Amino acid sequence: MKNNSRYYFLLFVLMFTFGCKSKVANTTKKSASTEKPNILIIHVDDLGYHDLSVNGSKIYQTPNIDALSKQSVVFDNAYANYPRCVPSRFAMMTGNYPVQNGDVPDDGFEMNHVKDNKNFVKNIKAAGYQTAYFGKWHLGSEESLKDFGYDFSFAAGHAGSPISFLYPFNKKKGKGANKKSPIPDVDAVSKAGDYLMDVMTDNVAKYITNADKSKPFMAMFSFYAVHQPLEAKEKDIKRNRAEIKNFDYGNLPEYINEGTGRTKMRQDNPTYAAMVETMDENVGKLLQLLKDLKIDDNTIVILSSDHGGLSNDGTNKRHLATSNYPLRAGKGWLYDGGIKVPLMVKWNGKFQPKTDKKSIVMLMDVFPTVLDIAANKNLDTSGKSFLPLLQNKESWDDRMVFWHSSKARPVNTGDTKSSAIRKGDYKLINWYEEGRTELYNIALDPSETQDLSEKMPETTTRLLTKLNDWKSKF
Image 1 (cartoon, rainbow, N blue to C red):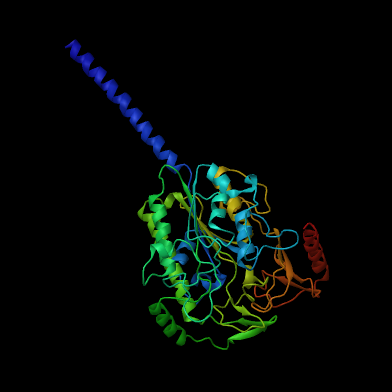
Image 2 (tube, rainbow, N blue to C red):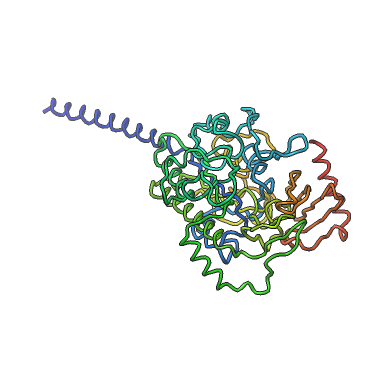
């Protein structure tokens, strides 16, 4: 009897001991994959602030992004660092103003000079993250992505826009010679009838599904949409054509004069509308995938755009995509139509959904924020982490930020060389070669129609001095 008691006692001890070890091992394995959040950055090309129905569009229906916004911290004063693609993307990836030796990078730029101690992606990778990039890079070759710290890339390289959104994607549809760089990878995994946005999203989904579950991932999906060429699925074009035909624009003119050309005032392009809506559908697919994989609570989703929508032409009159009204002007301009962008950040249970109507944030702040979350680290750049804003600890309503647009395109988008500063509610734009300055109170006059430069000479002089002081450093 005594021997039997000792046997059962030893058996109990062994079971308890190994059971606890097993439980600890499982807990350790689980915590390794969940202690840091996954990060998915969705960056849309040429998407205007008012191209979302949640921001007032009556033509484009974006239910998935609208739903995302209700679960996110939404920044109502978010800005691109430049009103065109290459400088804007350079600023976002480096966390700095896109100015070098008094000028900004442009098409053909190779981003190969970022030191490791200033490289956000390499530092995020060093913090234990898998890193991947999908879509529009426009900052160099495929090799430059690896040099910059991305483990994996798909359909990324020199291309600034697709040759076609319709398969085959690297073959021009219609007349004229093709001068664009091809998009790598996409044709090899596609077939007749495929649409580029869908192919891109499928490959992002494949990566997320197959990612190493023992490590978090940081993936950036940069849509080639909704940039030109304007090409969409025929059924979506037909639906939008009918809706636009029946829409009452009232007394709103189709165009007004701006700079050397025109500003489009109506969102009435059915093909562009179809592209925006397809983009939204694909965002919805990825959000649903995160839920299906049960990783949505531990995945931060950041959605943004690289600058305002294409609403302006110049001396060369052309077919325009959208309208940013009631914001003034669009792509190419330092009026808010060219630089104000959607920016929303979701982390279920961690960031309380709200709309921050005061804080001024920029795209150059995105990767400092991501690195702060991933590694609690700061690389001392002009951009700064807005994690304190996400956590309701700070407000940046009096922040001072700058722009310098030295690559004006009066032929294509009607703008001329200018610089700008915003501090608090006031924004000053200086056309430095023309000797012309305008001042606006953005809080009271978001359409920038009431120039206050003559009524408020002291404020104008003070802001212009600060702007020129900033410019004197480069």
